[in-house]
Image (cartoon, rainbow, N blue to C red; front, top):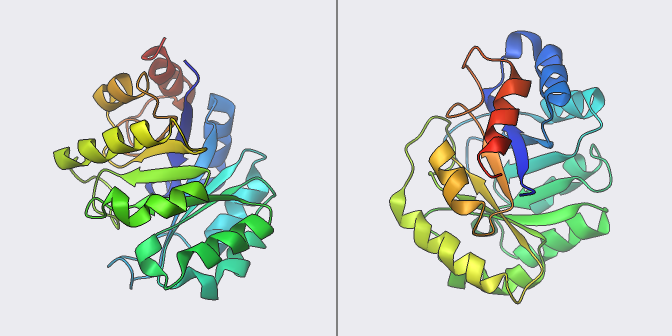
Length: 220
């Protein structure tokens, strides 16, 4: 089964970011997930534009940039201008007055447009945007911090999206509390990719290549 595994770089060891990126790259990670937080849309500061630029310079693999910021249209050119064509940019629809305008800016810059859906956001609220985007990042935890517990009611959201994608051109991605059980259950149903953080990938004292190989083996 062809699934995408993305490394949540806010969970990486920042004492030597270059080594982390190299080890993940060599280990077979599919893309690098970069969480940008402004301390306003979420009550935390995480990665910065400089972190993004650094990682972009260290790998040829795609970047998935998750903007947890207020009114991303005001700064979207800073991020798209630091990325390669074909990288992904997710916005939160609630953070923007006219999210479709921001998504069009992402498309015009040659990036893959995506939306991130919070646990408390209904699918009906974003249904029209599903016609625009190529990727839907479903938050199975509240945004802003790593190492949170899975929110069981989010299962209904995945089920709804899996049904809708039969007639629309988007893929579904899992973000937050991604354990082996979630991959084994949802990859066969059609969830395309999984953001890997402290639950499965980071801080385990294990070679990243071995870990990624074992994760892929779950869906064979």
